[in-house]
Image (tube, rainbow, N blue to C red; front, side):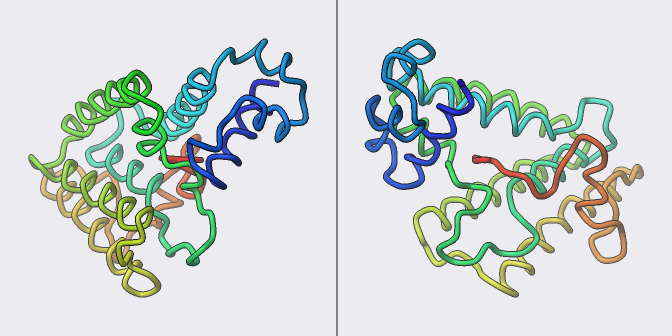
Length: 214
């Protein structure tokens, strides 16, 4: 039931943003009574927090542990966030529910939850065995790609998107080669990101995702 309700919240978020998430609207979208909804989520804030936490859990499920080779965590971050092929304009990709925008719009308490996760993720990126700044630069590229796409600030499409993805992948591969312990493959001749993802990791499912988002 909880997942059914959270799925309904995500659909409403995609359609109309946080303002569209009202208790009666969520109940109707999920096909349940308002009382059934309140049994699981007593407020709009609880609903949004539930969506954010579920997206965070999905995101973390595909990230490797601390024993992964240099660059593997950063590569998984990229694979999980930016697809190898640009999503078609106007389509909902794996970013159906952008985490950061939900958290920001839902208020400081929900945003604080996401900020704590980001601090922990950044610490893990810093410890990924790449030269200083490389993992952070990759995260900044991911954040910039999301911002451009979400706000329609001339995001790259087609060949431009593919080239951007290749260049960011190259940053990780070059950094891993520089450590003397290559763990992510070569951008030109090594395994694809799907191959690098390995068991329990995915190069295609959401962030949502920021999102499943994302």
